[in-house]
Image 1 (cartoon, helix red, strand yellow):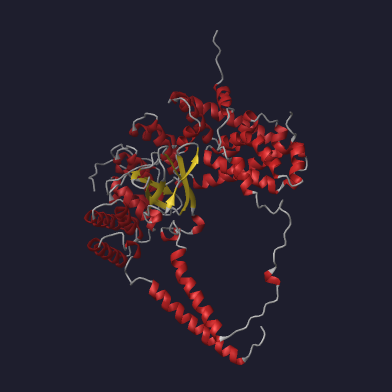
Image 2 (image 1 turned 60 degrees about the vertical axis):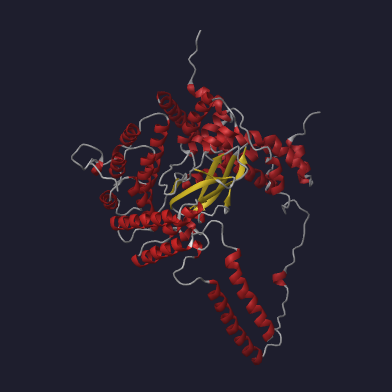
Amino acid sequence: MRQASGRVGFLATVGVAVFLLIAALLLMAATPAAGQEPRLAGRLPDPARGQVEALLSAARVAGLPTEPLIDRALEGAAKGAAPTLIVSAVTRLRDELTTVRTAFGVTAAPAELIAGASALRAGASADDLARLRELRSAEPLTVAASVLADLVAAGVPADTAVGAVLAIAPNAADGDYVAFRRNVQRDIALGASPAAALGVRLRGLGELASTPTAGDGTLGASGRKRQKP
Amino acid sequence: MTAESDGRLLERVRAGDREAYALLVDRYQDRLGRYAVRMLGNQADAEEALQDTFVRAFRSLANCTRPEGFGAWVFGILVNRCRTYAARRIRADGIIVTNDDAVGRAAVPHSEERDAIRDAIGWALGQLPAEQREAFLLKHVEDLSYDSMEAMTGVRAASLRMRVFRAREELRKLLAETVRD
Amino acid sequence: MTESRDPLDSLIETLKEPVRLRPDLTRRVMAAIADDPAMATEHKPVRWWRREWTIRVTPVRLLATAAGLAGLVVTGQFLFRPAVKPASSVAGSEASNRLTQFVLVAPEAAAVTLVGDFNDWNVGATPLVRSVGDGVWSVTVPLAPGRYRYAFVVNGTVWRGDPEAPGLEDDFGQPNSVVTIGGA
């Protein structure tokens, strides 16, 4: 650099300080007020937005992930749902996430909680999810819980799906769950009854499937009657 | 008028005539495309792999030391590209929800019965490990000799024979299962 | 006389049938190599990083530069916000993202977009392109491990589920599908 001098050095220091000041001011201007979720602005009408913001704040305090709640609100808004319906959907999801976190433990990742909420809605109980955590203590639960929900969506009775997912839980890798679901879905698409397809594919897993733990002869620990959540 | 040979077209490409390369792409895309679709079981991935192959081949034409063997050389590139795409797909499998069957049906209209057969074959092929599927397709669909396959894949002929054998056995089993279904 | 045919032969015969590819493959390849330096006439890029530089520092210039940079930082937040939100905001890291392809067969559609948990349910953020043959629409997006709800919007108004994916958990009376990305 030509013409560098002590004076220029001083001015450069001043310039850098001013730069930082301007940048900080502009960034502050661009940042929404603390606690406000900018993505809800313009997508959710005001009373509902305030209620959802309150739910988000409470979730933050409780240590729950807020992203799924925001997504649910945005989904409702995109679908043109009534604001009250959006608030109740977000509230319901918050409750489900709370239940799943109790079952999966406080260290559960957001993806696991979201999948667990799906499983819960599909018909699994909080006890089932806790059992899944116990059986797969070192494994992520996202895929296992999702497969459970997907099986129910494919027509497998909830009790049977829970039983199957728990039966292979101790030994199955995520890939096994995925293959299991795919095979069951394919069999159903070809005309097999959902329960029969699941039974056949479960037997096909051989040693992956653990001995049923419940005394009622059905699959896994969850062959019992369960109430809808 | 007889078509220009691969060697002649390649000479023209090397002299800066890009249109000659378009003729080579036209000439080989059907055969290569068929392999890619069968290997990857997915039209969109196959077309991406195919385009990628021709672009890469163009960029490394200097490595095509036997101009008359352009077809085999570019096929070798495709085999490698398909391995990469298949690996990517395996990582993402189970996972990716794509309407592959619908893509296949939309791309090649057929009767319902034909679709059913095609679906069953596609499914059976998809059950094979990638290396067995590769060997089976090169041997039985592309009708290559084991020597050519060895040169193309870098896998010893004896291993390739074993892979083809296992693929045939597995396919027989899977087809029987499909029929029972 | 009837012959019992080896089913494997039938399979091979079917596999040998030609496949139909996009008709514009050659055009796309030629477009991709159009500017390829391997064949283009040699051009000499300016070695700007090797040129000798002279920088004069004055307070006014420094302030102008600082303001400009700050402006870029702020406007960049708005201008370069990705259509698909960063995976890390959902779960996992960029390294664990999986390319996920969404496909819808909709021959009647003039436009199809993908909406879901991964793009803030923003109807215009992720358009599908008509990719194969007539009426096959697709788009590929990177997703971190997790479970995502999504749907297609046809012609900006009609909501469609993915016919090949599990559909459930709808709170709002519109079709919904779910995709799970393993790994977390």
